[in-house]
Image (cartoon, rainbow, N blue to C red; front, side):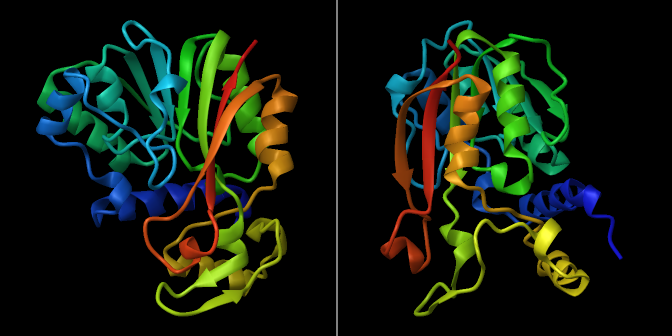
Length: 257
């Protein structure tokens, strides 16, 4: 019988495996991409396919950016190239290794911290100007905690940029070719709803322990934490059948007043 309180450790190992096997989100940017970013040609993702609007960001020079669950050597090197002071926080050692790899190759400084965002963040109050948080809340049960911690470590006037899953990927099973099937009730929470056998199958599947979250948790949670929502957009997966029928992701821009 598994200790379900340790589910984030399973997810850390899952991402280590994915990174070693070359998942899209673990392939670092190239030197050419880094050089282009220094010349002003760049784009970063909070969700699978749409670049984050540039107007969502403040000026980068001297800006303190926290990449929350943002390892992999993709977004943080871009921000470093643009002049930001970068900190990346992730629970996967392999994802953080990609950050070290790019920083060593390009010769910039980045603060790299391994940790679990389901716990209190190891940062001071009002330490950052921007938090960049790609789709990853699906790997933690308590999203309200994440938003409260984001609010705490952002300075007043700071910006929270977050990508999220809207739940459809948990409701619908997609074989990637020709078949869609309703498989779960929402919100999906395997810690509460899965039997021991089902929980073991989730671990054996190699997909980790994931959760769907409601709009009350995702958007309402940001508002309850004290943020002001200023913009959002929707997005779809890069592959699969479900993406042809509905968006599965959204991203928000929120400000700490």
